[in-house]
Image (cartoon, rainbow, N blue to C red; front, side, top):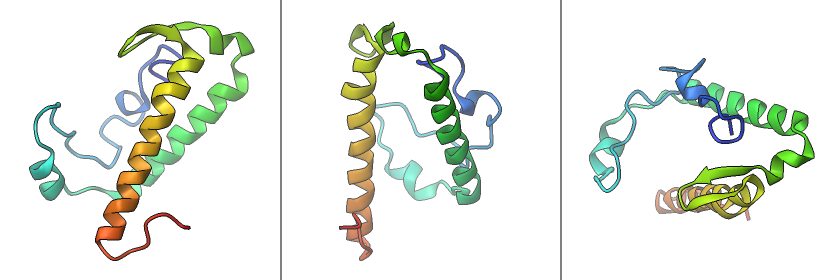
Length: 116
């Protein structure tokens, strides 16, 4: 939201630079993430603090943004589109995909994936 919505730097490039809990970013696509995922040691405490800050910044942004903000044209991976369309067609499904991946990984490890 900071990058696209506010046209600023993401928190991970500003106040949370080097403090996201992810010491090394994954390789660029199409490189395989297998080795990265198996060997990277994540700091869950830092990741939780970073996630909390991202949620707070996102909530603050939308609480203070004028309604016209949703109609503003922004660049996206597929070209210019209204910000509201970017959020609902790309950001929303992207998050849902990751939630499904996490639930599947938990299930493979014998834990409960989705809470239902």
